[in-house]
Image 1: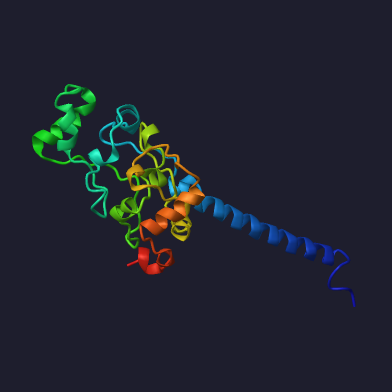
Image 2: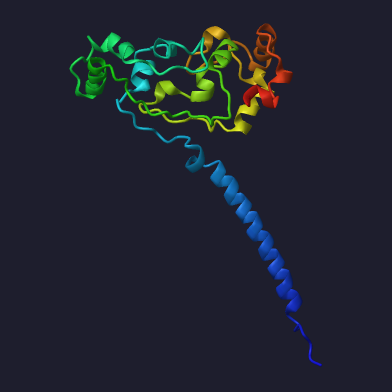
Length: 218
């Protein structure tokens, strides 16, 4: 009776197993890359808006404080989209005839709010409160990046769960004085390893609760 498997069967079997393992590892690596790539996170992808508003010009150049336009950020879950009236507070006098501001003028005349395109959008099952983070010394820059250098806004961070947990598990590494929350390019006055724990204690942050599921999922 002839052999069912030839002399090369063992070699073929080993090569097949190695090839399958390599394929699985490559697939896992590709999946990890896609999950963390701009294709999925949208990090670094500038989003066009109905009005070409440049944070680089208004924040970086003119020095506007974030709270001038985002008026509810210290008191509300939402940072609030600036109403037309805030824009026209300046632009009724400054560049009032600019073609780029036609949509703003039309909004004021008709009473129809501008339809800004959301850049930082969390899933409905995630609870995020801007006011809590601002009051506890988490800077705008921590989540939104150097907004003062963006002519067109793009996400600077992935806003994924693992990224949020990095801060929730060790807020001392990120916290800053409350009066520096809107400062761009912030540098701590002393080593963060010294300042951070002091501020966590001063602000009464209960670090043990920050990693509870119910903190963000309610």
